Amino acid sequence: MIRSLMLAYAFYYPLTMSLFWIVGGLVYYLHWERKEGRHADPPILSHWPRATVVVPCHNEGAHVRETIAYAADQDYPDYEIIAIDDASSDDTGRILDELTGVYTQLRVLHFPHNQGKAMGLRMAALAANSDFLICIDGDALLDRYATRWLMWHLTTGSRVGAVTGNPRIRNRSTLLGRLQVGEFSSIIGLIKRAQRIYGRIFTVSGVIAGFRVAALHEVGYWNTDMVTEDIDVSWRLQMDFWDIRYEPNALCWILMPETLRGLWKQRLRWAQGGVEVAGRYMKLMWSWRRRRMWLVLIDFSLSVLWSYVMLAVLLLSLIGLVIALPPALRMPGPLPGWYGVILSALCIVQFIVSMVIDRRYEEHIGRQFFWIIWYPLVFWMIGMVTTVVALPKVLAQGTRTRAIWESPDRGIQ
Image 1 (tube, rainbow, N blue to C red):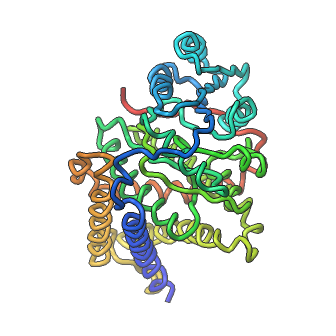
Image 2: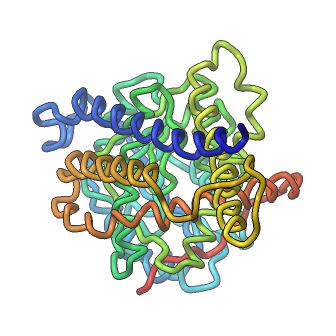
Image 3: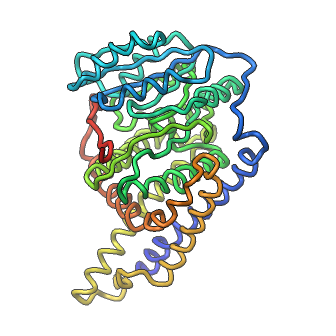
């Protein structure tokens, strides 16, 4: 009985969720993206309120010139740029001060001590001379029309608290880099489309998102003690009945880890952030008024359970090669059988669907298909193990006073 339940869950959970993402992504595409002109021309707003592009930085000296240059080239008539130098130990602060003489719309805030991204975003929100924020990372290259797309949502929906954009991978010199191209389109992009259809989004993208300052003020801005401030603020906005939308036309180009060590640290942080947020707000979620968040919480909880079940299945399979286990714990060998073939086939279908949808944002994405088919082998394993590690880590750490910056892996330069 135990064996049958474990095998069934290990197989049917990813199968079911993949079908949900495919169906939801297709419905989103047919309902919004396929409309003629929806993806071709940026929207013309009925009014153009001032916006603030926020760029929190910590040791971004190698990239910040390019980031600010792209931010200063937005096709939007009225906006400012606020960059935060959060106690960088490199030349980020000096470069930002130098750039204020080049770009008149740029202001710089300097922190003498490492305060963390959430505090940087908080201070920028308080210093902003506008009611809307466009938040990007210090290595992000913002598409020229991204601000206009994000502001279109924020100005046409009075209860739109945030809009998440569409990050694309810049660095593709290694297998890990190419795999992440597929991940951001076939996994992350498709999931955000589906979640938008089903009612609630797990998180805005930390590298590109637009916010209504009034909504942030109501929920208390970004919490400084959460390791992933983007997941935390997304849940609190939606629990306070603000809407979060996804805009695939709001593009930005980002750098991602291309080493296993860098990828491990990044995914462990993501997994830890999800566990922290779910643990903190789980009790508040079970009210009828917040029922639209139930699917988000249930899906996350089921994904954590799947990670533990899948790890147990793999470990028992390997142990069974060495010693004889009782029938209740005897698992198939670690090599995939018919169930693995079915999951792989569905995964390829998901990749194809996402590529068809995403080709308008990245013309030659089909060239990455050969690399993308290796995604489950690499990223499912990393996702599974990081989740297993993250849960006891969060339970053991107690209360954190401040989540501060750590310089991320920006890939092989």
